[in-house]
Image 1 (tube, helix red, strand yellow):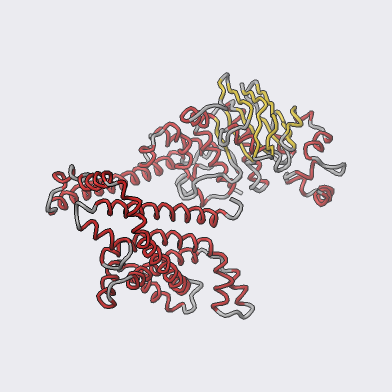
Image 2 (spheres, helix red, strand yellow):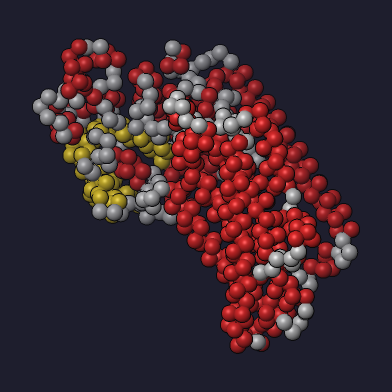
Length: 271
Length: 291
């Protein structure tokens, strides 16, 4: 389905992603883990074609998307939705308008300028918001919402694109644990109910374990682990994070239950 | 925590949808009305203006290219003399650029004081903020050419009245732009300096200027470009420099169009040169040293 071959990105003499190879056969929920600066975001941005690869190819359902240009590239971007750490909504526009931005690829600039979205699209946007439990916020400005609500608006915008793939770049890194759980659960539900592929950058191990079918570990731009959560032993995790023997999985946790355990506090202090 | 619940809210999904659709319709109605009024005003305004025109817009439209064509064809015939003419008019160009540079410098200093005295939170005398704002409004409301005409009448022709005229306009315009930048300045350093017993000028110099300097220089450079054009125009009313020469060669009509062409080339080249120079510096100032 999705095939990434020797995908490489260099910034000057620094290699952010080094010959990444990933093959995905069926819609899967994939978590990419690693320290900050490991190249996770760069990989996702290349998949969405927000930035161009230096070398290598991305193939989706037989179509090479890494060489698309212009309208074809924007069409691919509409099929491959992206969710950002800082939500990247338009703060001064209302929630429904932000969700409707998911259809921009199909609309002309003139229609957008005069806010002429079809009524069916507006109804669908509100239904999507309802599915994510934030329909009541529909007429409010995006900036008036809490972080967790804004991230769900961003997910609604992604769903509005009706994409085959949803890319999530650190979707919960700026949320509190409660909202993080809601957002991750929404992504999981979307994967299970709609059968969409979800690829999420996560920097905590336990989130990846809990929500993902497959975990890819990156370190210094290289893929150092690729397997099921069960295969992800503490040793493998130490490899990914480049940590010493004092590394404990709980130290990267944002779970509420684990936070209260004294040994975790000790481990956090060590990290 | 209500916002952490995931799932359907059966309560009034239709109501939400209807009220949002009503909102959308209202917005579209207002937008459509505004567009309609705009189009009607533009069309009727154009017709009124066209009626009052001495020549008529449509009958004159095809003649637009005639004058440039005359200038260009004559300049092309005498193209061998162009380099000589460019050298001949170069001193006038220097005078024009000088007028612009001095007036930008003086205007920027004036604008700096006007902006600091007219910005809430920074002003030395908060009660006088409206006064300084109105002063800067007035300074930029009067066109340079009007001030220049008055000053030329009083002081006689030459570069000094032009310089003063442009400086007054620049002070007003930069005062407005500077104060908008200063409004967004962080007041914490100013408070910190005030806590040490610093005077107002010390607080401004050390607490505000370092924050706003890149933007100020950027605006001043933009203003310098505008002032080169302005000082060339003021030559037309007797302020000397390139504009004076241009008026002479244009007013003489055919026969001296080669001089007009040479002056246009000089003016165009200068503006492109300073535009490139200042945009490079502005980019460096706003994006930081690394770029």
